[in-house]
Length: 153
Image (cartoon, rainbow, N blue to C red; front, side, top):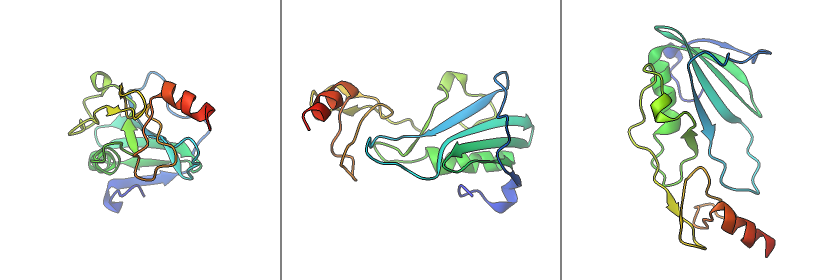
């Protein structure tokens, strides 16, 4: 699951009633949903919690939900699968600020740069850009321009 080697998955389980506690250090990875007219099945959010030196709990939810317990190498594979996307507008983004990343989580090699809105020319974060009707994300709008363009449709 999630392109993690079986040897790095300690255990799998179903989602429980309670997810991680607020005082526990965690990392959050979220699906970067830029297409406003598209509903995606699968997982939308992944949270990783440190339990011990080589045991990490991963809770995921969206259309699918559940839990995994991974080794430290499994966490590295998870990061590789989701955050090393070299696309200009990546499919997944790190929701935890870099300054708040716990020392047990491997820092991503590079972070996505802002993109340019096709309508007004302003820079917009890849987590805020709207890419309607565009499989290759050529239509790019900042939230303000998307509101105006959408009203004209």
